[in-house]
Amino acid sequence: MPASAAAPGFARTLMERRLNKWGYSHILDDALLVTAEMVTNAAQATPGEEIKLLCRWEANAVLVEVWDSSPEPPVPAPVIELTLDNLDLSEAGFDTNGGRGLHIVQALATEWGHRFDPVDPATGHSPGKWVWARLRT
Image 1 (cartoon, rainbow, N blue to C red):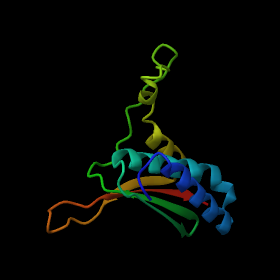
Image 2: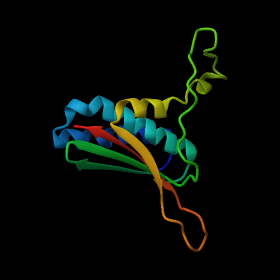
Image 3: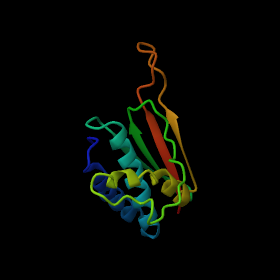
Image 4: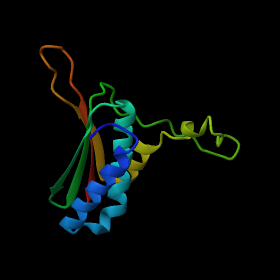
């Protein structure tokens, strides 16, 4: 799918259909939030490029994976306690209040991580990475 502002919503729709088909509606809320956070991160890392979503059934778990072409590993933002004094609700600064998506993934998933694609011998660089999260069923 294209890495755009619409990608997280589209990914949530796909994930909801898949999990309902598998009979995993009991993990739907967590899975949709994890999926949306990971797709949002991929879309922000590679705007306008292609990202990929993979959902795989495993014994006692569902594995959600998102691919993007960014060479940067996913890094959770520093934990900052938000108060009314440091929360910027102005229109100009509203988006700077984000950055907690990977903390949400970490809290809801049994485990999460990333792996880079193999290095392309022609370029000497990895073409991208997969960020994954495993949710217990």
